[in-house]
Amino acid sequence: MKARCLAFVLLAAGIPFGRTAIGATLEPLTHQPPAYVGPNQPFLLTDGSVLFQDDSFTGFWKLTPDAAGGYLDGTWTKVASLPSAWNYGPYAYASAVLADGRVLIEGGEYNLGGPFSLTNQGAIYDPVADSWTEVAPPPGWDYIGDASSIVMPNGKFLLGNKLDQRIAELDPATMTWTALGSAGADEDFNAEEGWTLLPDGTFITVDVFAAPMTKRYTYTDAENAGSWTSLGATQGSLAWDYNKPPIIFPGGSYVPPGETGQCMLMPGTTVFCTGASDDQPAHPAHTAILDTTTMTWGTGPDFPPGDDAGDTSAVLLPNGNVLVSATSGQLYEFDGGTLAPTLSAGTPARLIVLPSGEVLVNGFDVELYTPDDTNPHPLAIAQIIDLPFFLIPGNTYRLSGFQLNGISQAQAFGDEIQAPTNYPLVRLTGSGGDVHYARTHDHSSMGVQTGFSNTVWTWFDVPADMQAGTYRIETVANGVPSNHTCIRVLSADAIFADPFELCAPL
Image (cartoon, rainbow, N blue to C red; front, side, top):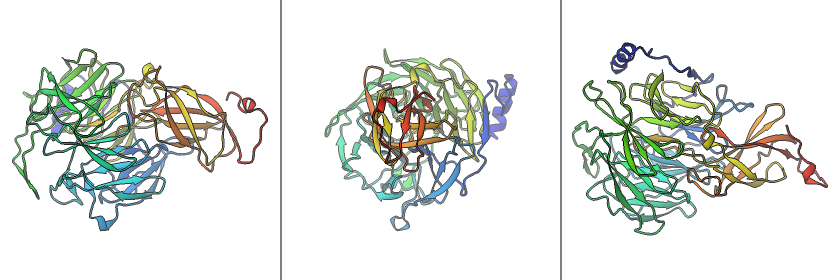
């Protein structure tokens, strides 16, 4: 019913529904997953493959690009499941791809398809070992549920307690939790809030409980440190209280404060935030724009009546626009001024930007979205400044450069279901067009907009089965390739007198 209402509104405005006025395309993958994976959130792994959870809640699959690096004809592989003995198969949880390449999931609003539970279980996936390990909750946390979370520039993972103001920090190196500070949160709680990382290492959120207020967290890596400050109110509220009744869970009852949309850092100093509504024509969903230089809010364009972005997915496109999947399934692009409808996924879809520059759209089917403008934003193009003279298959090397992490987390949801892609991948392309991803890990930074004067680096593992030859090498973050150069991959027993003669331009 909502989609039909929206179609009427768009047609009345002269915009065809289910088509695009700006030339974007939406194409289903040739090979759909063997098990239903929609609408779960995909995770981009650091070897270029994509991890999906299926509708058993414990099963996971991996989509691997084809030999030319394309995802349209990619292949599916079953990977390790969450062990049945754990009784853990969550939906709507906190999550992240960590700097070491592992995937962390924490909590879950629901568990194993059961009732509202706010489980405090967690697990971490090692894609090299293809195995899961249980993760204990922060001390004293009996419930986690669909929690806020973020990875800080130093690689540590922050988790917000859904039921109060507490914030806990996980150190992936030791897998230990530390309680951080929450001063300035007043009588608030972290429920239904998404956290958006800024270049200075602070993060912001839309305060659903106290809408239309917003706030900013200053992070300090020390026990009981860190605090919130007010960012003031947006001109139109970005949160909507649906006045839902209390929900019973094992620890008591939870009163939902409402929902909001996503906030996305765009190229430069702009953060674009979307809002929720009840989709009544008299209640349009608003958007707002934060200038991070002055930390002041401006008004953005409203959604068409009958649509909103409450608890939905968004990504930053390589061209610098924000792509939003609304509650109707309609996709919108925001270019800094206009919020334009493009194509429809038919359902609120989960989005992730691929290294190819396409967006993977996980709804009824798994599809690829390609915008009309595929040119990367100039500020997003990283520069490689140092790498080895040659590579030997099976070995690990360091690559350094500028802006390797991209300019934004590039993925956001209303609150939980986080899968940011602000980390570098290393791509090697042979003279015949064959594409290989060298798994990256242990990045020096998980920041955003690290700039062109601050050197950052990553380690990468050359695939053991790579053939000797000349390859183009580049990094990719948020779908944007860096500058590239050529490099030689040698056989393990190769000996050269002068390494400077090993590579000629492709």
